[in-house]
Amino acid sequence: MPSDTLEAVSEIRELSYAEAVREGLGQAMEADERVFLFGEDVGVYGGAFGVSGDLVHRFGKDRVIDTPISELGIAGAAVGAAITGMRPVLEIQFSDFVTLAMEQLVNQAAKIRFMFGGKASVPMVVRLPGGSGTGAAAQHSQSLEAWFAHVPGLKVLQPSTPHDAKGMLLAAIDDPNPVLIFEHKLLYKTKGHVPAEAYRIPIGKAAIRREGTDVTIVGSSIMARKAEAAAERLAADGISAEVIDLRSIRPIDFTTIAESVRKTHRLLVVYEGVKTMGIGAEISAMIAESEVFDFLDAPIIRLGGADAPIPYNPVLEKAAVPQEDDIVTAAANLVRRGEA
Image (cartoon, one colour):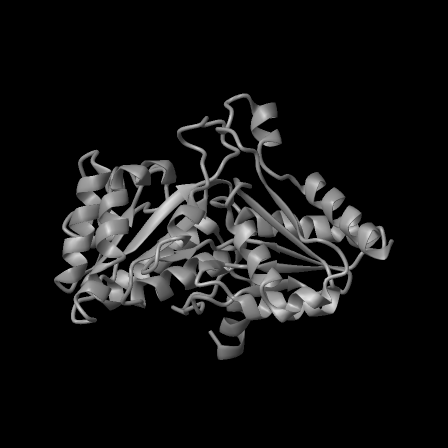
């Protein structure tokens, strides 16, 4: 096949979010024998959400390992493997269950490099299917990323597209530090352009998904997608919204946010996690403590999840986290307030 035809095929190639993660895992495992995947049901079953798929058949049970139901134990095994030179990728079946592994992640993985003066590193990746919208109720639907973003030594990512899901996973596997990747369950079936070759998305660099002049909307994961859809509707009403997809919430790309706010003079931060002490509070404080505060024409608005466990009832579940309509209303009100 001619090279120009191959290029054209690459340009239109689409994968689902789950397929992109699987492809990234496969490419990392092919390139480096130190990389292995383990977790509950990631082997023959193919993962609770089908992400690992056929990897066990391609790489064998020594590199795609089904573990006992013990998040603390498997997180500890990941830390030990990473310290001794391996590159483990650990899947926690639901992100909620990471609460059982907090000691190993927060007290061990995050601190070892510092405590050993840089002589030891912990190059491990933890994949965490999270978020609401599947009717899985309070113990299987949380958004806990802000917990871990609070911990020095951990990097925390939230890819929103199949393209970023693959590229950020490969970057995380390369990283000498522990990286947590929160994958929203509702995004697994979404599709998008994903190059066939291995590529990396820089950790700590946000993406401007839509340029605008009237209001900056900052979100990550599924909220970045909802913000894009909301921006389309706002445009029909004559409001130009700039949408920033954080992609990484630790480290956070403050420069991109600040430059946008200088232009639009208004900021709306949208996140699925509980509003109180969430990522929106941190971004608001960063703006308030900087010279960018002087560019604001209206107060910063945080649009976060309700201060309540996620309900099982589908109507209440939807009401507990920001939806597209909520973003449209909040952004429009913010623009009107700034013009008053």
